Length: 140
Image (cartoon, rainbow, N blue to C red):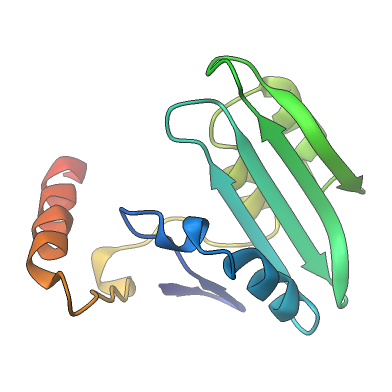
């Protein structure tokens, strides 16, 4: 979790807990009823991704791409007006579209370690601390 100007950024954990929870998408929609929200996810082993943007209390943009053959991209949902820069980013067919779109909305996407707040579930603090330490070593 970290602050980015007027934005609060949340990231999922190594187990994709938020992604797997059935309550996550409805919660994003509920927050979007009263706040601007941009949320995105990307596939791990394929080229799928999706993003939503809530603005002025309603869903302004939703775009969902599936990748059933792990190397393809098939648009299965396309609602609303494209975000700034979205058309060009989709044409580039890159793998970082979520981060790049966040940046076009003015969301800071690069942080120093001391700007992050990391919460570890009590049932497994040691393994997550080890993973974070490993991630720290890899990024240097």
